[in-house]
Length: 218
Image 1 (tube, rainbow, N blue to C red):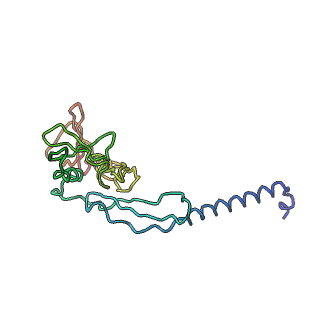
Image 2 (cartoon, rainbow, N blue to C red):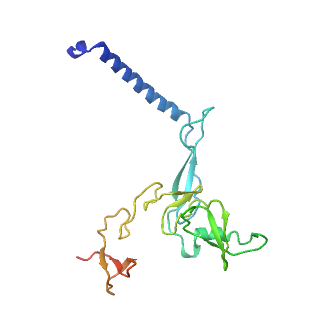
Image 3 (cartoon, rainbow, N blue to C red):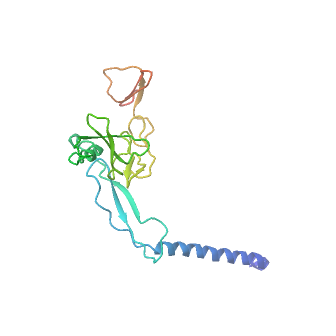
């Protein structure tokens, strides 16, 4: 009680102002969230294997506009496709084989790893130098690059970690373990022993070879 009697009117006013501001901030966040309807169910996956995308929508209940996004995505069907399934981007190119381009039919092959626009469907006519953008964006779930898990969603390349989560930066270590520390194999550089079972290797520009041996040698 002694501390309260000693408090000056200025300090009390500042304390009351702080409480009022905190209350308004909390209320504004509640009002913002209250302007949205609940998230809807997840859509069917864009792919049955190989990693696809699914989306969920929500509706703005305000007569004006709502803060935030009305769509969210997640990955799905994160299982390897059978070898006979073929490349997903190649499938999209070949779907145009029976459509005339400038009055002529072509057999289209995928053009991958475009550094400028990896999520457009660029295809090359087989046996020619003709490269055409057959669609402004590939189907959701198409890999941005052949050696990456990053995938195209709504025409934009989205980061995907080895844990198959959107926005994740988790990567495999040299042993192929997601978010691993490299302790499950041993590097043998520049040599090869037939009795060792190497399941992963890297070749350098100078011709040396890195072999990652499983399990690690003592």
